[in-house]
Length: 307
Image (cartoon, rainbow, N blue to C red; front, side, top):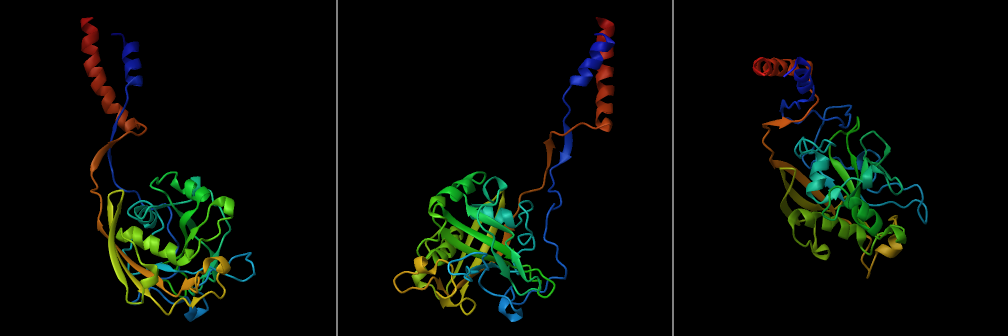
């Protein structure tokens, strides 16, 4: 074998690097301006500092209506769950364990809504819209955008005047795109309870809920297992039609659009994937090529002398 052939073999030999399969640090987390201060209930009532339990929508008919913040992931939850990331068991991974994904191909569809959580941030647009993925984490949100389904917007209570880290959610079940994504009959209450049903893997009886109702359930995604403990809390939202978006079509049979209950969720990570050493393909470095070159040369040169 000639020296030229040896060099060509060296140049074309695939290189595998021995890498640690460890989760890298989060590339995006909310910037918190103060240390988290979490009350026993896991969140601050937005009304205590001028906030609201209804979102603000740019255009409604009539103007000035909003949608209920009807579910909360409390600040007492696992610290990792409160980070807005998909890795390391973060919030987006938790949402995936419930069957919900980020928007279709990362493109925002629909109008923005703003919420004032009474944390000193004033009204801020939603962090994102998360959609039922119909069992397809990659593309299912596209189907929900077209066909309708359960979805929610969310915000973090992390401002300088009340940083609990809790996640406020406005959950509702919407009609297909060709029907303008209006909310189905009783869609705020049902959307909330179908979300909880995804956790419990059972039917949540919306009409029978009270402020003493509790549930618990376990969900899993990407080898992270989450224990969610839920309690329904009254006295935060009003049991009303007043000021509720789509209230003329959402209320039914004398039942208000909003039943006055908020699903309060504590989430703990109970199982995490083992962080192990594994092979990963990656671009070779000079320091990795040199030992391989020595081995190849010591192997090839004796063969060349014999040829």
